[in-house]
Length: 184
Image (cartoon, rainbow, N blue to C red; front, side):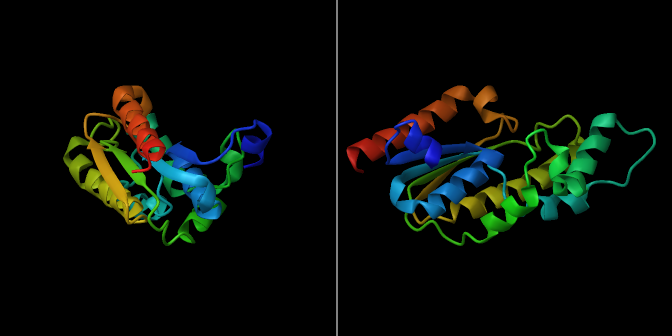
């Protein structure tokens, strides 16, 4: 908020947040609701995702791909250590703060969800649909934070929707900005 003020960017804001940015945008919208006109979440992180997915990883095997080992370590343990990111992100505190948000009222919100697990080469194909279903449920829970929300699934995209489907992200953001400007 201070950065926006110092940059002379006046509200109302249409916030767009991807992944962890989705948590940050929700926290800002919750704390400064009068300054936020709309919210777009782009395959946003959910505060319960680590609890939901950690138990789904198979036990370690000596012959598994290094990428699977690294992902398992992050999702089950490493995410709790703020030293694990270059930025020093305290995900434990961020998740706790996000859990305190039970509603964003009637804030216009659009949740864009990706085929994050359907399109992950590190996840065995037979379990991809089940994991994607779990991710989708978390995304639905995010959409339920507002009584004025829409959710769009972009199944052919991975987690980085802004890279895999930039036109769809831009179209949703432009539509939300237009809605705000027109007062609809």
